[in-house]
Image 1 (cartoon, rainbow, N blue to C red):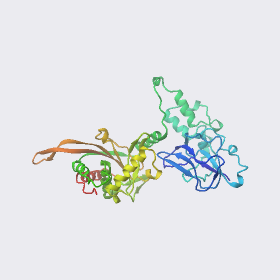
Image 2 (image 1 turned 90 degrees about the vertical axis):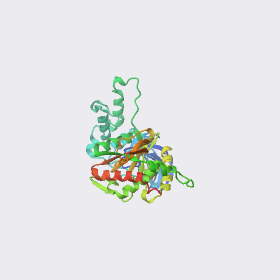
Image 3 (image 1 turned 45 degrees about the horizontal axis):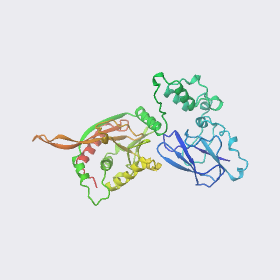
Image 4 (image 1 turned 90 degrees about the horizontal axis):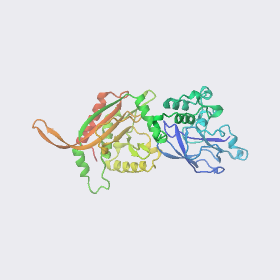
Length: 404
C-alpha cells in the first residue's frame, strides 16, 4: 500500500505551510529515515523524514515549490517495492485535483502514516458535502464575501479558499484604486491569527510600573573586562524575570482545554523583530543558567532568527515572553499575550529623569528610569498575585544581586 506524504502540522496552531524543496526526486529510492523534502511552517523551516522505505512518486498535481498550502495537502507518495512498477501517482483519487485547498478539504476519509508530524486529512461527512469548504467559509466571513454566487473551482464545483480570495480582489471598493493590496499570508497571517485569537479568547489585563534601573545600568557598564560577552539589558531582564517566576509560579502557567498547566521548567521567550515578522526564540531552564550563558544563548538565537535559521525546537515550550520596544523610544505599551502562556512583560526605554530620592530630606537626583508593562490572563491568575510578581521584578532590577 503506498504511503501518502502530506503537508505536516509543525506547530500547534499551524494551518498552512510552504513546500520549499524536494530533497529526493520522482522515482528516487527512499529508505526509512531519509529526508524527502523541506517545509516552511509558522516560524521555522524543517526537513521532513520518511518513516517508510520505497520509491518516491510525485504526482503532476503536487503543489509547486513555494506554494502556500493547507496542512494535510497531498504532496507525494512512498511506494513499496512490490508496487513500484504498477503504481500510477496520477491515477490516485487525490492526485487529480489542482487546488491545494481542496486537496485537504475535499479528500475522502483516510489515515496517513508517513511524516513525523501531526497530519490527517480525515473530514466529517457534512463538511465534505458542503458546497463550500470550512476554510473558505471562514475566509469569506473575514473578507466579507458573499460566497453563494461564486462558482467553485474545487472537486465537484466546491468553493475553496482561492475562489474566495479571488472574489474579494474583484469586489475591492473603488476608493482603493491606485493603492497596492498586500495579501495577508505566511508568517504575517499566522501572527494576525494568533493576535486575534489572544484578544478574543483570553481575559487580558495590563499593569504598568516605573523602575529605577540606575544600579542595573551600572552593573552592565562595569561588567568585568575578562568576560568575552557584555550582556544586553534583555539578558539581565531574562535572568531577573526567571528568578521572579521561580518565586511566583502562578505566572509560569498556561491555559489548555479549560484547565491550567503549571510548568515545571521556566523557559523564557524573547520577541525578536525580523524581516519576516515577529519571532520568539526560547531560552530554557533560565534559573539554572548564569547571565553569561543566557547572554551567549540569546545572542545566538537573535542572529538565527534574523537569518531565518532557527530550528523548530528553538521556538517551542516557552512558558513566559519578554518583548522590548525601548530602543524605539517607547515607554508604556500593552503587550498581547503569547498563547497559551499566562503572561508577557513589555519593556520600555530607559531614560534619565529627575527623581525624588529621599522625600524626608527633599533630596532629588538624576536616575535612569525604566517603564515595564505586564499583561496577564485573568483566567489564570488574579490581579494581586500578578502585581506582586511585577513588584518583585521591580525590586530585583533596583537591587540586582541576582545577576551572576
